[in-house]
Length: 143
Figure (cartoon, rainbow, N blue to C red):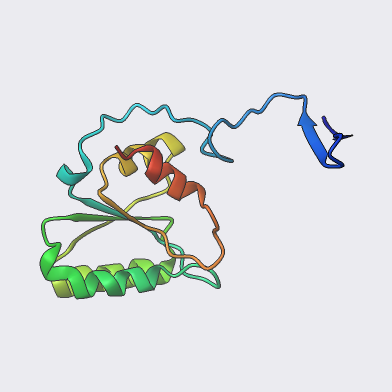
């Protein structure tokens, strides 16, 4: 329960009297996960949020990978929450460049965090996310 109280300095302060249940951020909710962490510089995986719609811009991420393809041939690219258009473009990109691209099926939050733990780079391009929960997941699994 929030209660406003007036301080002597004429400020209004809010005092939270309940329990805060999400210690990190919204649905992430924990810094604990079972994945073994390697140094980010040793990781050879790139994670991409695969949304392509009014706010998601995963096709832009794929275009960047196309331009970088000669430099990232030894990386595995993992795309999660991939829109159909992104799946098609990823398949074409893999065929044309030789990039190793894997479309991640729907998985649990802990499995997704494990994927982040194996990733050196995370690309989540959106016009509306603010601080997205997937970005927090990527941060939690870094060193």
